[in-house]
Amino acid sequence: MKTIVAWLLLLWAALIFQVARPEFFSSGSLVIPLSVGCVFWLRNGTGILIAGAALLIQWILNTTSAPIDVVVILILACVAISRDSPGDSGWPSTTTGIRYAWWLQPAIVLCIGLILHALLVDNFQVEYLWPTLRSSLCIALPVLAMTLIITKAADQFGLRRRPVW
Image (tube, rainbow, N blue to C red; front, side):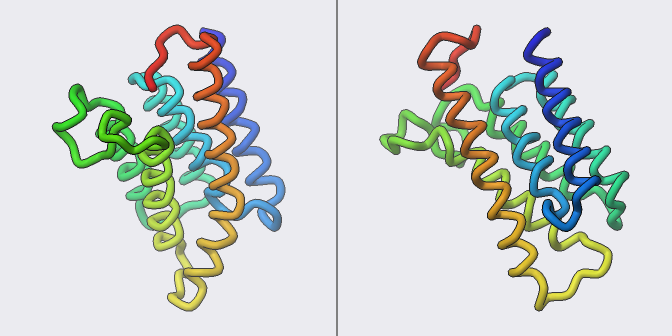
């Protein structure tokens, strides 16, 4: 219960920072990586529900044409966390010999989500796609990396009930 409340407060604070200072934090640069981190930390339906609620609130605050990015992020995260055996999905696994594969799945979900989020902006123009993605990734990648490193450290020190990696 404490973990759920902590994630709710963290995502709420990210939404507030993003809305309060849009000149510093581009749309999606805080909420999307923290939502992906929440899903991969909790690895259950509660994490999907909390991340989906935060992403939908972000969509309501920054209305785009349709919340396709929210749906794609949640579906990719569900596929990544729900596979039972390492060989039944196209996602890399820690058993395939890749040493740092524990960060690859969340990074793929994050990058696809940010690209879709940038494409769905109302005033989308192709020449502004790369600067928008670059500014979002400059914030989103370190936030996701910090979340994943904390997750890995919590697993190593036994601070989580169910170590996954």
